[in-house]
Amino acid sequence: MKSYIVGNWKLNFNVGEASIYLHKLQKKIPNYRDVEVVVAPTALCLQPLSLQLDRTKIKLAAQNAFYNDFGAYTGEISFAELNGLVNYCIIGHSERRYIFHEDDKMIAKKVAACIRNKITPILCIGEIESERAFGETKDVIHDQLVGGLSEVSAEDIDKVIVAYEPVWAISSTKDAKPATPDEIAEVVEMIRQNLKEIYGAKTADAVPVLFGGSVKPTNAGAYLTVPGISGLLIGGASLILEQFTDIIETAKRVSK
Ligand code: PEP
Image 1 (tube, rainbow, N blue to C red):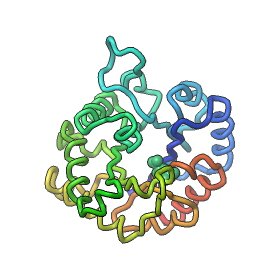
Image 2: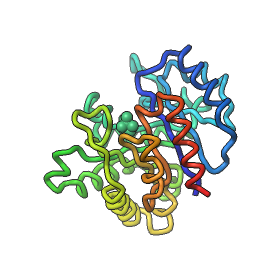
Image 3: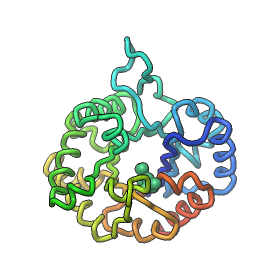
Image 4: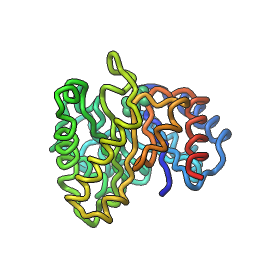
């Protein structure tokens, strides 16, 4: 299975900065067939970047969109508008869940809208620190996964990527601490078990599961070799060209 290295730029880089970064990144990396490199800039950058991008090397992801395709929804952009511009969209990121109060129902509609518009959703799930401390991780993972996929049929599950992002490990969380490979492996196993129960064993194994949370060049190799992990979702380190490139090269080495 190919591996995915996805940079989530969040609300950083204006169009000019994003364009310069991508120009440099394209020069730095060869065309790695077994590593899918994806960047998720702000919505305003998607159109101009899509024109400059060498899509054989780098793919674009949106960070969010609204689940209805058009209509009276002031301030929103839709997946229908993103169709053709991006290959992926991050859905259910913890910042959307906790700052913008997105619940599993809304997330499920966004996942369905992605698939309807030929965009691969990267469905983010993960527990907060207190949920882990109270032994609720298994239930949270189950509920977010089952909830987020509730509108996805068995025929479409191969169009979905899942990202395990424990909120306590995300670098912007107060007192964040990196997850250990064993902690990640345990949750990946839970995710696969849940997928198996809903969609059957063969399908469950085909869904890529990424990890995200304080990934750096120094820990990327260890995370990429966690059983069942197919790639990384990277926030802070993706903003630093050298670090992001290093992580891409690590993925290439590990995939050999
Ligand atoms: C994220 O917010 O998705 C993330 C993984 O951030 P960071 O890599 O900075 O922890």
